[in-house]
Amino acid sequence: MKLNKTLLALTISALMLSACGDTEEKDTSLLDGSMENTSGINDASTSGLNNGSGFSGSEMGGSGAYGSGAYGSGAYGSSGGANNLGPEFSDPSSPLSKRTIYFMLDSSQVQQDFVPIIAAHSQYLLANPSQHVILEGHTDERGSREYNIALGEQRAKSVANMMKIQGVSDSQLEIVSYGEEKPAAFGNDEASWEQNRRVVIEYQGK
Image (cartoon, rainbow, N blue to C red; front, side, top):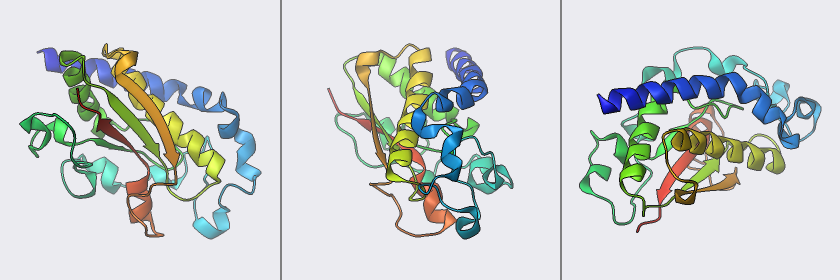
């Protein structure tokens, strides 16, 4: 019952973040609508996709990897080892074994598929107040460096805000944005870009 209430609260918070997401991004000068015509953003004629803030675009269409809900394996699995963590972090059936949250193109909105993962990590952090995580924001290679650093930060903040709504302390959370600098995949195709649009939850140990 407690977990159901947690998931319900996180779902509501995700919807609230979605409703105000455009406003939050436009408050950041690097993410306002004026960027859509700057040279730092990929030309739609070369990429087929707009990479400016505020576009819902074709990335929202189709079933895609995000619509399947299959975040437990393959590209959507664990981000790697962590310090001083229990066996549940290496159990593929546990949401705690998934430490990567993926995003749509130009979006800092947490997708519904990943709400249970954030809920599980929030509950773990609440039960282990000495644990500290770094939320690493990443983007794909398209867009200017400045734009991608800002977008990576917004993505990390979205995850942090959902955790804080669940009661996780600010002192347990650190936000870092790497933008496009640390890709998980090095291809120049949509499959690679999907893996690079992410926030990684890195535990720092006790």
